[in-house]
Length: 88
Image (cartoon, rainbow, N blue to C red; front, side):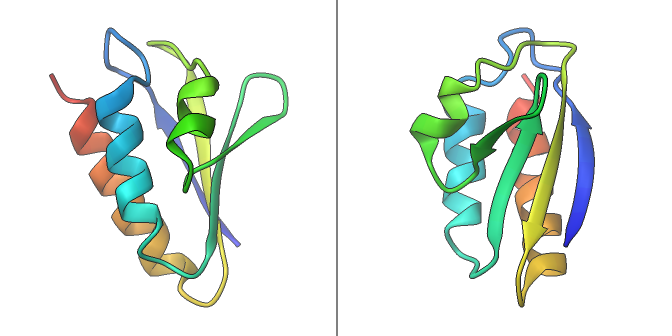
């Protein structure tokens, strides 16, 4: 299992564009990919609804996690795609 902390810098928090970017990249991999937020809550990175339901706001931090046979590659790709989509 590998993980990375990501600070949400978009003024809108996690909205449809970054949620879609995360999901579109995550579904390409076999690994289980999710992120933790708030007080121990978890969102499935392969589900746009789960990502949007997290309601993560600007200034909050998530911990993106990948677990599986392609976890290193998956984490890097999903993280980069997600962070790029947060730029406004």
